[in-house]
Structures are given as structure tokens and as C-alpha cells.
Amino acid sequence: MHTRIAIIGAGPAGLILSHMLHLHGIDSIVLEARSRDYVLGRIRAGVLEQGTVDLLIQSGAGERLQREGMAHKYKDFVFAGARHRLDIEDLSGGKVVTVYGQTEITKDLIAAREAVNAPLLFEAPVTRIEDIDSGKPRIIYHHDGREHTLSCDFVAGCDGFHGIARDTIPVPPRHNFERVYPYCWLGILAQAPPANDVVIYAHHQRGFALLSMRSPQISRLYLQVPADDTVDNWSDRQIWDELDCRLAAGQDWRLTRGPIIEKGITPMRSFVAEPMRHGRLLLAGDAAHIVPPTGAKGLNLAFADAAVLASAFIEHYKRHDDHILAGYSAICLRRIWQVEHFSWWVTSMMHTDPAQGPFNLRMQLAQLDYITSTRTGGAMYAENFTGLPIAHVPDF
Image (cartoon, rainbow, N blue to C red; front, side, top):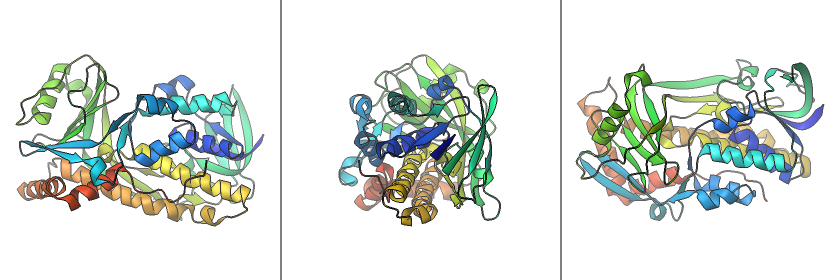
């Protein structure tokens, strides 16, 4: 088989890329190592930047998002025993974030691909990517008990942090930049109406805590825990008690409790691979970068990469112009490093670090005071939180 664009990975980056290319008449095939049920069942982030929402709606994949997504115009910070509200919409010049689960986006995009019979193969793990320095790279993959070869013009590596695509780029020229944080998140999904109508970030001497939501009936909550902690160390009651302690510190309210339907530990890492292109292989999403979840940027970064990559392929095939394709890595990395900085900064500001002392605590409180008490500080936070501009977005 041959296709113009071979896309490895049916996560958000790979699916939205295939969808955008289809709208411009450019054929692609998506290969996903996992089963359809596994992909549709993955629970991931769900805070969408304004640009991500706009991209989904403009591409025709945002109908359910518009009905069910929960727009958030404000954000609350709890620190030093008090609660402070940021007017995100006002401070950002009219932008908001929208809560809509990544699982739901995946369902919408798979439905869009299947509605037009676009090639989307599940349980098709890629074992090798060959000849990326030639004009016709090849992908070797397994499907239905057999080995297959797919030739293509370009390979889009959208297969996540543990995928094969990034490691296909030799070292050098590839360089990895990484920081692993000395704490993790214990996250839960609970069948309980959110106790607040906006996202709350809490800085507490016992550690960071976060209140978010997936729907009016489902709460998403997190606790900072040690890097070597496990869910077995936490009973449901201990989790709720600790969340109440950190989120409601100095306040006159408590969380709405309910059955915990999922719990897990999320490690905290910042990671970037440079460059994001080698020959005919181009990386997008978690294959190229990871951010700590504090900034709510992982999914949004993947969409931004895909928008630039789709624009590059559209210019290449429709207008025979390769300036975006040639500059793809530099274009994406400029925004990625800005987002990495924001995510690192918010993570460092909100979490208690066991290796830091009282001076670091005062620095954290000073930063929190600055963004909640000055328009300049609040605007800087709101601009980053609602999303920096994407350099290139296809015209739909």
C-alpha cells in the first residue's frame, strides 16, 4: 500500500491531523498499536485552550463539544488561607478555557474518520520506520496476524512518549531535554457534582491540590503526593479528607463526596526532543514533548503541532510551497518552549518541594500574590492559560 501521509498513533494529534488533511483532499492512513476499545477508554486531560476549541469547531468536529463543553471564565487560587479569583475572560481579552474530556474528543474524531471511511487501523503496531532520508519512506507494521509494508511520502510520528517514532531519529542530531519532578499527582474521578463552578488550584503546606470537573455530575480532583507513592496507600476516605484539608483551607465549604470510579498516579515530567523533523519523519504531540499537567497543556500542544503540520502538508501538495514544511521544527519548538516554561513555572509555584526551605515558600506566595492582585500578573497568567497563538492553522 501507499499513502501520502502515514500517521502513527490514533491519539488527538494523529486523529485531528488526519481529519484536517482529509478536508483538503490529502490522503492519509492512521496506524494505532492499541485496540479501538482501549483508545476510546483512555481517560486523559480535558481543559481546552480557546485555539483548540476553535480548531475543532472550524474543522466540523466540534458539534458535541459545543453542546456539552463547559466554558470557564474564571479560575480560583487558594493560598495562605484565602481564596482569590481571576477573571480569565477579562484578563485574556475575551478568551476562555473549556472543560471537555480528551476521551470525548477522541470519540468525536474517530467518528469523523469512520464517517468518511478514512483508513484507521487499530491493533496495528509499527515495528520499523525505514528510509526516512529517502523520498519514499516505509513503515513495517503488524495487523491481523501478518506483517505489512506501507510506503508513503511522509511519516507523522504521533505515537506518544513511549512510541517508536522519536527513537527512529538518530542521536545526534536528536537531543533530549528533561526534568523529572520529585512529586506526583494522585488523581481521582468521582461520581459527585463539582463543589465549585470553576477550577481551583490550592497551594498548601501539605502539598498542591486541584478541583476540576468532567461534567456536571463527575468531579476530577488531584493531590500532590511523593514520587514513590502508590494508590494502595490511600483509602477513599483518606483521599476525600486530604482534599478537604487542602482545597478548603480557611474556607467555609467542603467538597461534595461520592463514589470514586477511578484513581491513579501521574508522574511529573518536562521533556522536549529536538529537532522534531528528520528527513521525511515529523514528530507531533507527546512523541516530541511532555509537560507537567499543572498547566493543562499536553493535549493543547498536540493540537497546535498538528495544525502547523497540516498547514505544512497542505502548502506542499496544494501550492508546491515548502516554507512551513522546512521550518516545521523551529516553528513548533518556539511555542513549545514557551508553553514548557509556563507549565514549569506554575508547577514550581504551586507544589511544595521537600528539598526547598522557607525562602522558596515565600517566593511561591509572592508569585501567587502578584498574579492575583495585579492586572499585569493576572493578564500574563490568563494569556498563557487560555493559549498562546498558533503560528499556522489550515483554512477550513
